[in-house]
Image 1 (tube, helix red, strand yellow):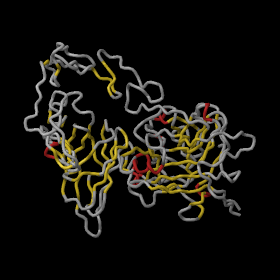
Image 2 (cartoon, helix red, strand yellow; image 1 turned 60 degrees about the horizontal axis):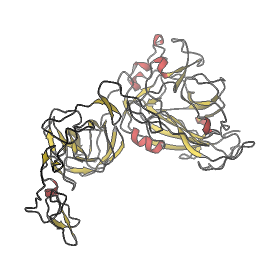
Image 3 (cartoon, helix red, strand yellow; image 1 turned 90 degrees about the vertical axis):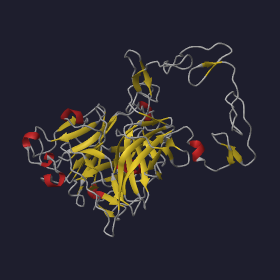
Image 4 (cartoon, rainbow, N blue to C red; image 1 turned 180 degrees about the vertical axis):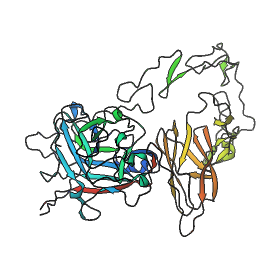
Length: 532
């Protein structure tokens, strides 16, 4: 018969005979850099070039090893999320059946204490809520979420009350020579390299590498392409880089703080620890990076030297101007101004009800954006009304409204590296990803003359939407943070599409297995026992 049971939510009560009830806090065990929620992770992964490892034969596995903090016990595992890549030239048929295995172990890996998994399930026996039938193979270029059934005594792993655990995805189908589909030697019959063929899907790796975290279970020694997997190794032991995108969703007694030192070489890790110390001569930590600060007092007799000190002190009856000069008694400057600051901590007047004072000292109707006033004294940057005051020539940056060349340290706190995809149809909204560094909340983006709905995902990634109906042609991109703007010439090309739509090339797969992830779909499937 088929055993059927409803799926419990993450907030379900702890049902374990012999274990006291404890507070349950949702927690995601992962090593990759993407958000905890698999839906959000899939959206970020979409369109990003990531590395893959396609060379697997039947019986071999990839996985992730997770260490558990003592305060987290008991750990109640709710499900497993995995994202795999499709063969670039075989997208429609890229799928593979596998066994999801969980090993509870007292060691620190990569080999578990026992060769037999603590709990396992086959994708043949998974109830697919989309097809309403059993069987849900891993789909290439898709994120799949396996949900365990905690109302079925045999439909879930036991509670983890001590030690660590490992989750592995083991391929069950025979591999074949798919070099034409993958375009890489890793699918060739080259026994001296240890490659014995490929599955239709491959592991997907992010840009970071965590030591003692990602595992392979392979047939060893190289050249032996038959038999069972017999050697557990860390990724780094066999030259594989990046963290596999394989997560475990659970509830724990107390979720620990997760240090965040991504792209940081100094400063706080957010959990009371440090990402490193700056030890070089004259170095200081600036936004997580060690930099040498050079005091700048040229032409200044007072004020900040840019390195936490001052260039000098003014006399008691003098004040220090923004230019670093000592001046005597202040004389109010209100010529041509009806409101606003008089330059001496006073006011030139106030506006009537329903009016506001702009930067030129003029009273204008409240709620009316005034780009002319906002661009006073600026040759570039945002006008505060959805437009820009001007664009700097190529090779120059906009710093506080002024075009500057040379790229001196500190002139700009962020960089633009690429836009993906670099082109798209004008008959639909197109989601693009802007990659770079130093991104922060509040940044805005303008493509050509069109403001974009941009969201900063992390320090290296901005997601934006190019709206349908934009004028065809190649457009420049301007990204602004406060008074600093970056100009990306020819960033995106808008194509005119007919009834057949646009065809955008995937691009070749590199020798390292990097490819463009075309689609990130969430296939929600529930694990239920399927037995006769």
